[in-house]
Each structure stands twice: as C-alpha cells, then as structure tokens.
Image 1 (cartoon, rainbow, N blue to C red):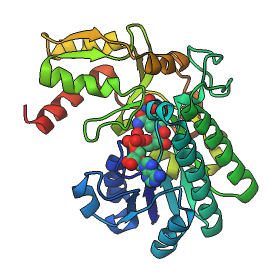
Image 2 (cartoon, protein in one colour):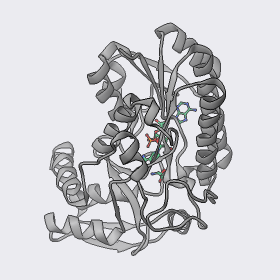
Image 3 (cartoon, rainbow, N blue to C red):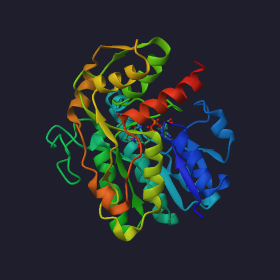
Amino acid sequence: MRRVLITGALGQIGSELTVAMREIYGKQNVIASSRSASEGQQDLIESGPFEVIDVTDGERIAEVVKQYKVDTIVHLAAILSAVGEQNPALAWDVNINGLYNVLEVAKEEGCAVCTPSSIAVFGDSTPKDNTPQDTIQRPSTMYGITKVTGELLCDYYYLKYGVDTRGVRFPGLISYATLPGGGTTDYAVHIYYDALKHKRYSSFIAEGTKMDMMYMPDALMAISTLLEANPDKLIHRNAFNITAMSFAPEHIAAEIKKHIPEFEMTYDVDPVRQAIADSWPNSLDDSAAREEWGWNPKYDLASMTTDMLEKLRVKLGL
Ligand code: NAD
Ligand code: SER
C-alpha cells in the first residue's frame, strides 16, 4: 500500500484527488498538505492527516516525509498561468524551487514523484492542430517556462538518480467542487456558475479560440492510472500529452443552451489571457498516453455539461 503526500492539496485538483486517493489507499495513507490551513476546505483538512507545508521550504517537506514514512509525493502546489503573468517571480519560485525541493527529498528518501505538466509547455512556434507528443516547446509565459523546466528536471532525476517520476500535460480542467486557481482556461468553469446563477456569461476568451479541456473525473483517473502503470512501458514518463475534448467559448455556450435555452454569452476579452490562449494548441495528439498506459477519457463536452449542471445545481441550491 502506498503512503502518499499531496502538496497543494486544497487547490482545484488536490481537493478532489485527496478524497479519491483516500478511497484507493486508505485515509491514513494519504497526507494532504498546503501552504496554509486557512484557504477554506475545512472539511478536507479535518477528514484525514493534514500538514502545513510551503514547498519552497525543503526541510519541512523532508520532515513530513520522514514523519509519515511517505513513499510517493503527488506534487500539485503551483502558480498557474494568469497569476504567473501577474507575478512571474512568484511563479518561478514556487514552480521551480518547490519542484526542486520535492525531487531532492524524493531522491534522499526513496519516494516516487507524480507532478502535472501542462499544455502551457507549448508556444507560438508549436504546431497548433493535433499537437504531437514530441515537438517544439518554446512557451511565451513564465508558467510555461517553469513547466518545460519541470519536465526536464523530472527527466533528470529519473535518469541520474532513478527517482520514479511520472507526469501528464493537463489541458484546462473543469470541475464543480473547487474553483480553479487563476489559469487561462478558467472561463470554462466560470461559465457554468454564471449560466445557472444569472443565465448569462461574459467570456474573457474570444470566440473561435480553441483549447484542450478535460472533466475532473478523467483527470483524477489519469493520475491514479499513470501512478500504477507498468514502468517498463513508459517512454514519455514525465510529459504525456492527454486530452478529452477541444472547444472554443461558443461551443461550450451552445452546449449549455441545450439545457438552459435563455442562456446568453457576450465577450469582454482580456488581452493578457487571450494572448496566452492564442499561444497554446488547438488540440493535442494523446496517442502516446493511450499506447503506453491506456489513457481513455470518459467525458466529452455533452456528457460533461450534463453532469456539471446537475452537480452545480445541487451545490448552489438552485
Ligand atoms: P490550484 O491553483 O487550484 O492549486 C494549487 C495549490 O497550491 C493552491 O491551493 C495553493 O494555495 C497551493 N500553493 C501555492 N503556493 C504554494 C506553496 N509555496 N507551498 C504550498 N502550496 C502552495 O492548482 P491546480 O489546478 O490544482 O493545479 C495543480 C497542478 O496541476 C499544478 O502543477 C498545475 O500547473 C497543474 N495543472 C492544472 C491545470 C488546471 O486546469 N487546473 C491544467 C494543467 C496543469
Ligand atoms: N488550466 C491551466 C491554466 O490555464 C493550464 O495549465 O493555467
């Protein structure tokens, strides 16, 4: 049975992954952590082991890993794309030094490490459609730069020290449990809240801007499956392209309209986030993940929209 430490566990992915992993490995075997215990999420904090860990403090990571005899670190603490453009120094510090600290502790204590990369590793010079697994990676955001560096750092610790590192390039993730933490794809979550609450949404991403997306249950399944995948089959172990759907704002709006006919969308484009979106792929080729560890998402835009609206209605008491 694994003993897992999750960093950034109170964020969009971590808040759901902690619950999912506790079902797989047992409550006491999954230690949730974040930089503070006052980010909300009180239920999660009280539902099992929780420790305050700022990932820029390597000694604190080592202390908790030793205390709980952790053998696997799922490293989620990060600064996302839009916040990273507002504060590039913070994005560098958390995303690079945090990952370096996690990998150093993993090397010393014999832990496996699973940490997500992102579609943000690609840039304007990358082929936009059916973006290949192995292609040009010259991102124009600090977030993207930290994610490319992160992929390379994980390769380095695997090749040089034998640390069992694994990771996927997540697209935009859509979920109803926890709001996203300041990314470019966040519009695709906010639109569902506003559709239910106000029957209208103003999109900060322009019409026609396609990006890859995924519903959270598939994202959780990706991490759990990759973590347990046969290592002999993993050729691209730290940087698998994965996707479940690709759409532009007008496509998600049309899908929502099938459930809420009065729904209307307008555009108030944010130039910073639009420039980031324009630099990312329209659609990814995820065949390496399918071949090497059986990646096979369950949700498309239609089934995700049905489920999101149903779950959010309950959550919002509507
Ligand atoms: P999030 O912003 O929702 O959560 C990140 C958490 O990390 C937050 O709770 C934050 O408080 C915490 N954190 C920030 N600085 C910290 C520090 N110094 N020490 C400890 N904790 C700190 O992010 P998320 O969406 O859950 O993303 C998790 C990982 O997945 C990140 O690596 C992100 O780049 C990657 N990813 C996410 C998406 C997405 O759409 N959500 C897409 C691609 C990749
Ligand atoms: N959803 C993330 C972002 O927009 C992609 O890594 O930052």
